Structures are given as C-alpha cells and as structure tokens.
Length: 162
Image (cartoon, rainbow, N blue to C red):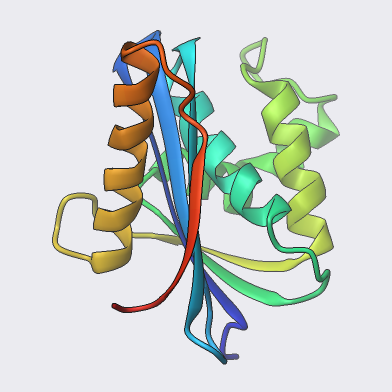
C-alpha cells in the first residue's frame, strides 16, 4: 500500500539527560507539500526526544485513518511500536523486569498509532537519506536554541523536495 503521508523524525540530546531537541518533516505524497517543525526541552533524554518527534508529527496529521510511513533512526522507537507495546500494555505498562520509563509518551504514541495506519520504518542515521538528514538538521536547530536560552519551537511549509 502506498503511503498518503511520509514522515521523517529525529530526536537528540546534548548530554543524556541534557538539552534536547526533536524535529520532523511531514510530506503529503499527493501534492509534495511538506511541513517541517521542531522543538526542544532544557532537561530531557534522547529517547524522550525521539518519541516526542513521532508524537508531534502524528498530532500534526489532522485527518484520521491515513496511511503513514514514519521513518526514524531510533530502533528503540520502532521496536517499541512494532514489538514491545502489546506486552507492556498486557502487563499494565510495565516491563517484565519492572518499571517502564516514559510511559506517558508511550501511551500517547499508542493512541496516535491507533488513530492512523502507521508503518514504522527504521532508517540508518547520518547515511545520506535526505528526509533523515533534514530531520536531524531540525533537531540540531532546536538543541541550539535550547542551549542559547531561546524558544526552540519553529515551523515552515515548503514543497518536497526543493
């Protein structure tokens, strides 16, 4: 099945925990129109930023039920969404070994995943994929803003590719 929307997400931290940022590019396959957005937090973790990038991208898609292919360089995010969530939910949002971190974000990801038809794809980071490279640039832009004490929230609309 061809995706209606292609998404590339990234999240990162300088220090873990530390200044973090997330970014995404959302591409409408029919029109080539794209939305780029980023944001950040002063004290966070890499996994939280990876998850927040996916959450923010899926929240930006207002029409439910679309087929979305979401690319991320986070194997943790892909495995969470494709392998581990059913077990965590069955155990009351706990791991076999005990406490599960970032339950708030995992529950939100699960809710958004069910609202859309998401295919989760891992892409190797820093390997020349234009969408992944752009998401990484947005993430770094957000981290730069956080570290400088500025608002990291930013967005623009454009055509893809351009």
